[in-house]
Length: 125
Image 1 (cartoon, rainbow, N blue to C red):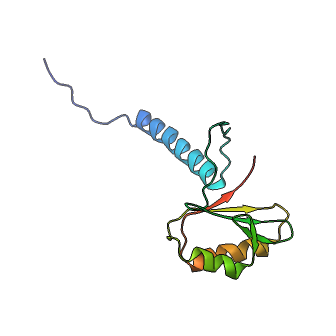
Image 2 (cartoon, rainbow, N blue to C red; image 1 turned 90 degrees about the horizontal axis):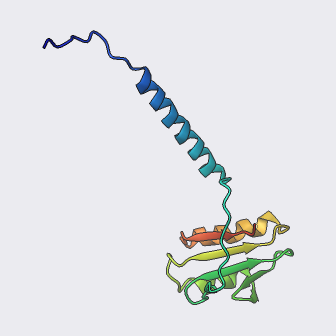
Image 3 (cartoon, rainbow, N blue to C red; image 1 turned 180 degrees about the horizontal axis):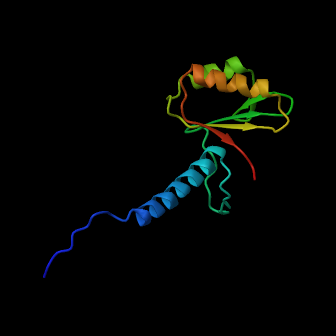
């Protein structure tokens, strides 16, 4: 049996596979950066409520008033209250959609200044 000598390699199937993989990567990265992957969150009757001792919940209402654990406070008092917490403590930021952007930025700036890295912005679908 004589072996055939190949003078060239057919790369067209290889290119087809690479183009499909490239398209998948580009589509996935686009959805991730824009955050528009549609999901339907499940309902749970036995879901735990947020525990203020383990998580920090900051609420900004439409008038720009700040609440920490359902108590009306100013930004400086929030900063003093969270300084004794660990920097990895989850922070949940609830903001009314009509709040001035400046109030939101002030809270985020305070959290960044104090090196809190686990910040979540709570939204409703």
